[in-house]
Amino acid sequence: MGKLRVHGGELAGRRLKAPHGIRPTQGVIKEAIFNVLAAEVPGATVLDLFAGSGALGIESLSRGAARATFVENSGSSITILRQNLEALGCADRARVVHTDAVRWLESHSAEVGAASLVLLDPPYGEPQLERALQLLDAHARGTVVVEHAAGDPLPALKSLRVARERSYGDTRLTILRPGALDQS
Image (cartoon, rainbow, N blue to C red; front, side, top):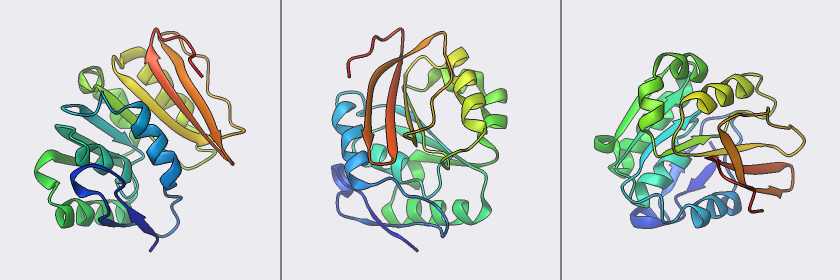
């Protein structure tokens, strides 16, 4: 299993387990996300879609998010995610949903609209990313953070606008906000 750490907040430095076969978010990217979102995280309601180990949602909880819903389809990742939440004492502020992220988005539009922060880190080249972003475009009212392959363009969206984009090697970080203008 890979070695991940929580980078900031009350759990800074604590280790996380990572399932085999996932590409965990690099520390520099995690820092970039949470530096940009620093004022938005305390008290936030977070959705961590394609959650994997839960590293991004757990980072949010460590930095003061009120609660997080983790949506993940892989059974082995769900097991690791639950272990991470228990080991770090975050399980009481977390809900873990074992299902496909797109299917969950299709049936939980009210929860999507109530989330102040949505984090997406699907496997690179994941064909469901486009559909997930279309559903978020229709229902999200908060900030949406997408970690994706630098060469993979995101679909055109109507409501969500690029607030910031940065590349880190083969990874692109795109922050979307309702009606935002690009501030890269």
